[in-house]
Length: 392
Ligand SMILES: *Cc1c(COP(=O)(O)O)cnc(C)c1O
Image 1 (cartoon, rainbow, N blue to C red):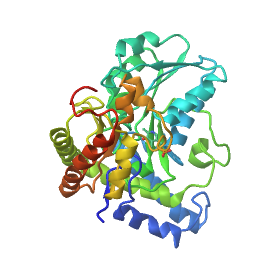
Image 2: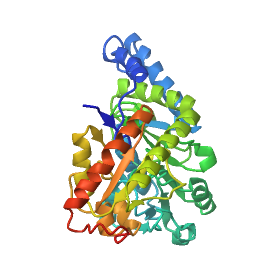
Image 3: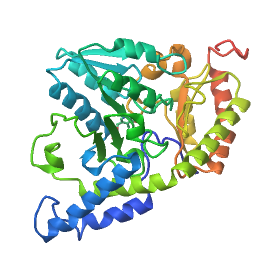
Image 4: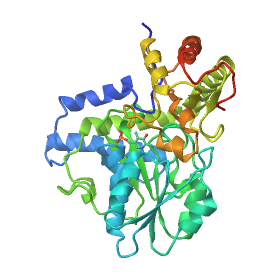
């Protein structure tokens, strides 16, 4: 059976060059980078090289990069570390209703401890009202947290404009850029962000490693206390192979950014147009232009997304109903709900997320396999009357 992987927003495979760069650090280069002897020194220089590679991709200084265990840790560290460090200044956070759970559940947990959180609404395209954002800022606001690109719909937020608003009001600005880094240009200087989250396994580095950009002059209270690693910002012996792999992945992604964006967007558009031409009563979720190049979120009216995914899986096609974190639980995605998508259409949504290895043949296979599955499921659906358009 063919195996077609269109769930790259959930995780990517580790690319061969990245794995190759990592391998010595499981064997001959085993030293603890904090050790001062030869074994440690040999390794610490590679950690610093990786720091430069990550910094190079987002245009910051290497000292502003803190290595973490994942994107979730980065978001927790940025938010909780700011709340603790700025508690004299205030206790109000502004974020959006469509953030990843690593931001949303962190905010909800902090609300229980007395922190005030504003969750900004989005419109039907998944975009924010920036006037509303600016009006939400008070004397007590310590953090604005808006993701760069949405993991479910791919919607891209106007980070530069939000950065200007944050600067104007002297409020720290965090952007969860886990889905954006390596896929679209991310420049922390141009964007005016103070904190930015990166995860390894979304950009062809391994699982269990990430990075947080912390702009100089924006100290965070550590989440993990321990040794002096990461300039006292995060205790714990480094995940050396993971960090070296993340550095290499960032270097490679930076060199291929233009090509990646163009190529993947062409394939995504081929999939989108092909599906819309072959299947009636479908709806695109998320703004058609302001979108990550490889993400397509689409609702197939009258059927359940989960059912469609099961049938696609049987044909070797891996896609998702939204975020990997919600698959398995019933109910509608919080992102589509915030966009005001009708609950029936929300449950009929499927997310395809393309990667560097996705080929035209993969897309054509999906275009061949999917339409008859949808028709079969619709024929069995009590909601489907073969009168197209009713649900839309
Ligand atoms: C995957 C993801 C995360 C979490 O990253 P992990 O490394 O899996 O913890 C955070 N934010 C977004 C937007 C993501 O897509």
